[in-house]
Amino acid sequence: MADPTEAERDQAEILVESIESSVLRRGLSDVLSTRRRNIERAAQALAAARETAIGNRRHTMIAELTQDKDSPTQYRVEAIDEDGGCEVAIFSGPSALERAIAFAGGGYYEGWADPQGLAGY
Image (cartoon, rainbow, N blue to C red; front, side, top):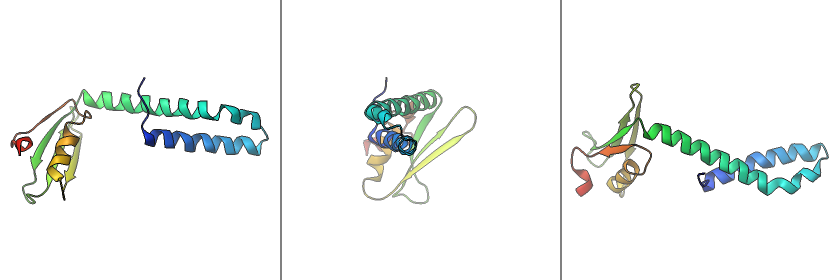
């Protein structure tokens, strides 16, 4: 099972706190003893959903890293799935190329291409 990210743990905690608030209003305070277990279960479920989404997407998309034609200080990571859907991420500013390379190769996509040879700087 996937390890939840900090954001998933935070989101799970918010969900559980909302449930707890409702429970407290009904006077069922004994349920609060399971709070930590509920947060961990919710965080694990969110992490599993994230892994499933990434896994499904990873099998269908190859990213391509390119330098923007109009703004040479910007770099693009583009991916098109088999249904014609397109994702584009644009990186600019300090370390734009390094961040684009890290994003393209970060495991979200099945693989990535570098037709302009940018990864070698």
